[in-house]
Picture 1 (cartoon, rainbow, N blue to C red):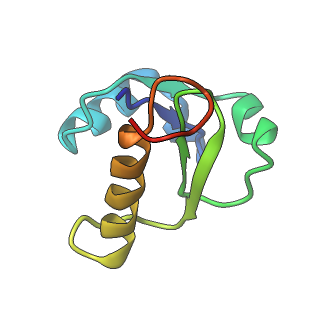
Picture 2 (spheres, rainbow, N blue to C red; picture 1 turned 45 degrees about the horizontal axis):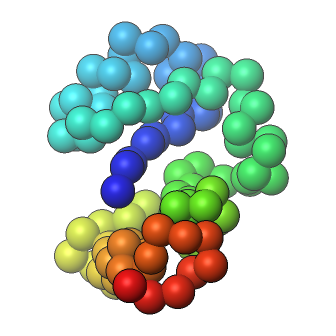
Length: 99
């Protein structure tokens, strides 16, 4: 599994790559982050809200979308974890079958 963050700034001060990296590190987010300062990825997804989370499968298809914060010990976090585990159980082909 690979996690990648995409940061589309809501405010001007959020455009600074060093600040974004520092905040990601402060929160223990030790995976790569794309800085989407021109909102290209945001627009490609037709996104409208901060924060938004997308779970993409091995074939590049969006399989889950969540708008709003996700908290580990709440239903949002449990549902996200279940979806990730479901996708990890799928085989490597893009057919979406089980191992």
